[in-house]
Image (tube, rainbow, N blue to C red; front, side, top):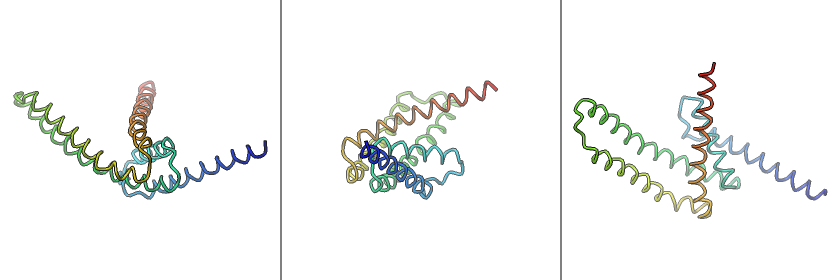
Length: 163
């Protein structure tokens, strides 16, 4: 009984130290340039969720966060380019209504291809710090986090409307 309790306490201490370390690292990362505190909180929650879900140790977690932050920066560049282009195109459609649906589909596929290329370019870097199973789980965990976030935001929106 004493050994089990000691092991459980050690596990809890390790988890607490990992969370504190993660929090400190997230607060110091340059990716969180956003002025909005809400985005900072979401980013910190996402990083914590991913590190916990992937069961990374402290060393892996710090290396992972550095690479993942760089990946997110590169992904944001691709997204901004796509959405900026599409926003302009949507305005043109309103005016001319002559843009072919085929062209919009091709542009969307180009965007998706760039995202895939970006993911492939980061695979080796991720695999240097985690297993292939953890990498596959990372992409699943990202989707789960997005779903959790969307659920929370919709509940929050409903509460605000009810007031």
